[in-house]
Length: 164
Image 1 (cartoon, helix red, strand yellow):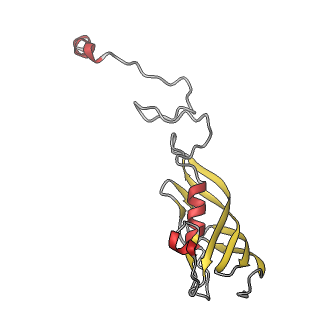
Image 2 (image 1 turned 180 degrees about the vertical axis):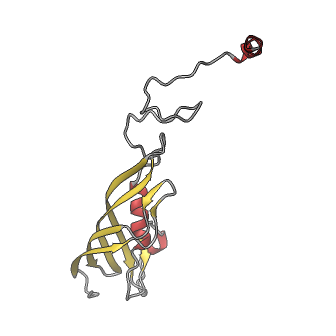
């Protein structure tokens, strides 16, 4: 790409995820399909990259532990500074400013951060998921009437006498 300010180019890239993109709870698995639609704009200090990342994240429901699949379609952006650039943005170290060696724009960190921040902290299979029984671990969606007889612990000694 030209270093002439104002030069612009768009690219659509499809590739397997080089690493897990996301968190330990939910993320785009390694080698899963990732699509980037990007615009590269040359500026005086570097190259501004903006666009979208599309993929499918996989994880576990935070309530019932079923598999959750979430389509990711989120914005990606960052300024990749030329090695010889003398910019105030570099001094402020904003999160959207990255190093650029002049040859290769490394998008992995930008994409990973964009995907991770777009995913839910606690993924759910549905907003009304009842989860698991805290007594026995039964899946409450399969048995909505599930319940246990709860004995007041103060009377548990008397229950032992009755069982004998």
